[in-house]
Structure formats: structure tokens, C-alpha cells
Length: 411
Image (cartoon, rainbow, N blue to C red; front, side, top):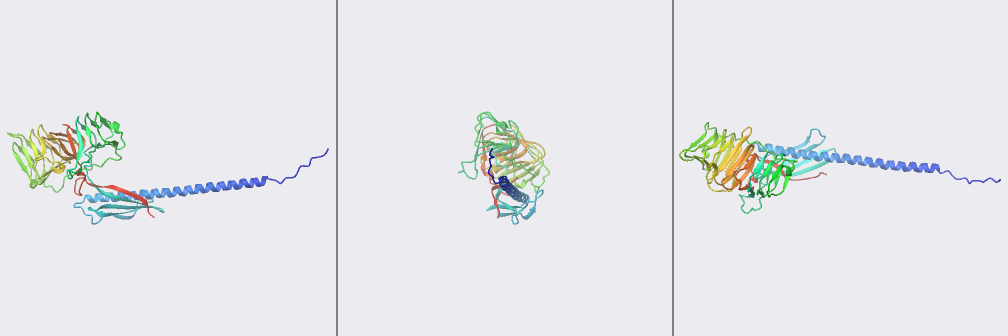
């Protein structure tokens, strides 16, 4: 029987094994390269983020220093904040910042952040902002009666017919804003940061603009009475007659009391800008009035409460739409009560973030309100003066804020 002779073949196991090894090595090198590149990219990204955070920190520091300068009167911008290579706590990043400009042209902050080899910059335009950015702003409740209309105007520019009148609360609690039937708000409604507008706003049939939650609550700084006012060591008390108060009577008084006698008591503010610090209460008896004469203004810093009885009020002598004619600031400790009335038109601003404010007006109301809680008792027309947004460095509660900004990579 013949034996079959099988042909001899060259072995292929070794080349296949070598090929597999080469492929695995190539794959491993590729994966290692991808991992290394990813790691490098992650480190660069983290460094870029840290540099950007350092630049933001520099902007925040510069803004804080500008606001600290505002506390020193009179304003002096001959030396503006600047610093180089400021070490930041809990970070390996450093920042450098400079502020340039003046009141006329505006101020610009350039902040550069550095971390390892990364450099980022933030350039921001900052400007002044006052405490009356809204028609009505409260910490807690805001109630508008049926038929109330809220809109805006500009007392410094009669041709400006596109003034919005935003209202809002910083509260996040349900029904903090109550809008009764027929209320019209020609502007937006803002509620506390992170809150649900549908929950915070109780809309019983109002027409409004947009409704949304704020990204952050506006700071409501504590206002203090001017320290330079002369202490009169007395009160202002008038009964059954008319008294006149001029700028010569500016100062600190214990209280204002107007009482009805044979005729209602009247206190006329005349001759210019009258500034009073009342350490106690203001009490207006029935039909008594504080009247701000044409060409004059009244600024009240009140530590106590304000009580206006039936038919009494604080009014301008002549109808005016300039809300700065009357300025009322709550300067007391704890919760205050401002029960304000006007026999005819109400014109003025009230800044009382720790006070509960009620406003009764015999006619339209013009100005702006900041309060802990606010109720427009009589309903009617409430007009916000957009000119209040045009502020000066000496205005109460004014601060620098970022108006515009841009960021980039510094080569």
C-alpha cells in the first residue's frame, strides 16, 4: 500500500503572532496617545477655567473697591483701583486689574487672570445704578387693588414714550404678589431668584408683560441719615395753623406732629431743599398736610413710623411729575410702618426695605416704591418715573454695577 506523501509547508504561526503583537502595540500606542492628549487637553482646559475664574475675581475685587470709594464724600476718581499679581485664596491663580475712565466718559475695568501658562481677560464697562430701578419692589408682599394701572414716563424727557414700569418681589413664597381683577402692568413682573412665577404671582385677572424669576436679588442697602445734620433738640409741632419750614431749618428733630385745631394744621416746605432727620414718628391729624411748595423739595430720613389720618397727606403744592420732589427713607431699626396719604396727586419716592408701606392717593401717583411690603390702597394710576434711573455719585444707595462685558484669551 502506497503511503501518501504530504507536502511540507512553511510554518505561519510565528508571522501571525508577530502581526498580532504589532497590531496590539499600534493600538496600545494609539490609545496611549489619545489618553495622553486627553489628559493634556483636560489640564489645559482646567487651567483656562482657573484663569477665567481669576479674571472674574479681579473684576469682582475692582468693583468692590469702586463701591467702597463711593462711601467717601466727595467723590474723587484721581486715583482708581489697580493691582498686579494678586494671589487668590484656595487657588493657584493670580489676577491683575486696572480701572480707567471718569464720570463723564464712564469707567472700564480690565482684569487679567493667570494660571500656569493660561491667561484670560475680562473687560467690563461699569456704571452707576440707584435703588429705584423698578416702579415697585418689595422684599415680601405686593398687592394691587382692582383697576390699578402701572405704567412709566420720563419726567426729564417728555418725548420718551417707551418707558417700562417693572414691578417685583424678592420673595419666593406663594401669592407674594396679588394682582386683582383689571390690574394692568405695562412692564415685566420679577419674583425672587429661582422661584416659580406661577406660584409667587396670584393673578386674579391682570394684564402684564413677562413674568420671570430673577437670577439674583438686587441688594437693598441700609440707608443712614446724614451725620452732618444739626440736632435741634426739639420736635416740629403745629396745631390749627400754617407753619413754614425752609432750608434754614434743616436738621434732626424728635418728631413731626400736625394737629387739627380751629383749622387743619399745615406745614409748608418752601425756599429750596429741605432735609430732615426724624428720630421718632411723623403724625398727621385729620385733614392736616405737609405741602411741598413749587421750587422746593423735601427729603425725610425717618427712624419711626408715619401715620396719616383721614383726609391728611403729603402733597406737592402744584402738580408735578418730578418724583424727586419728595424723598422718604426708612432709617430705623426693625420693621417700620409708613401709612402715606395724599389728598390729591402723590409724587415722590419711598425707600423703605424694612417697612410696610400703604399708599392712599386722591389722584394719580408718580414715582417709585421700595418696601418690605406694599399695598396701593386706593387703586388708580401709578406712574413710574424712568428718570430715577439717571443717578449721581451722591445719590442715596447708589452703586457701581457691570453694564457690559467681554472675555477673551490673552496671548
